[in-house]
Length: 221
Image (cartoon, rainbow, N blue to C red; front, top):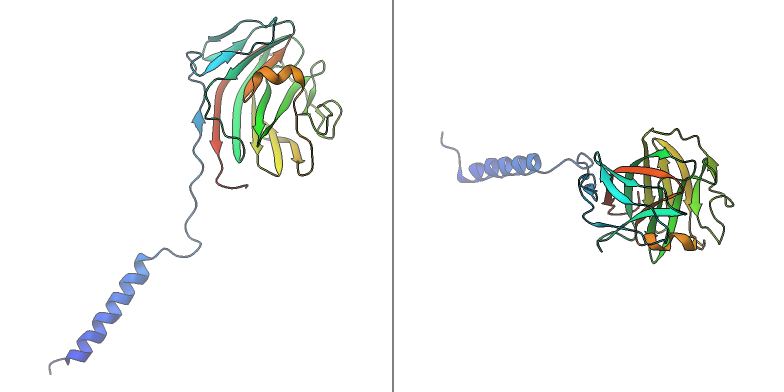
């Protein structure tokens, strides 16, 4: 007995529907791609960087794959010289160590929308970590202030996340800043101005920095 034309069409429709279902991704089964990190320092040259003009700054050079900020009177810094650094919805990460001295060795200045802020790492004689500045108060005065121990010669990873509503910072895997910035006045101390839009600085201390990288976020996590 031959199949009728209508029966053949019915079977074909069933097969087409099954193929369509198989080819479609299952809802919730796909994962969004992780934002891609972009390296800002090649570990060999100062390409893309310049010495921050503080006045009295020490030498900025590359040695053994690291950006070396020599002791200055008072600050030494390296400023990112390209114009492609994001202003919000991004993360920046660097690895740094205190080589000599007792004060901050990788204080990082960064954009927050149209404003700028700094994460102080090891300031005020060595232990202070926090944001400078919130509502005109620096890291030693505002609610982000914490005290951390830093050993000379030990590498520490600093990661900073900026969104329109929040600034978050980690020291290695420890969250050290978790600040809602809505309604807050964001600023930097005047001496950090040469580090804008993005830069890293030391205070009467030799610092070494490596693996500086940034990634943009599609939206606030």
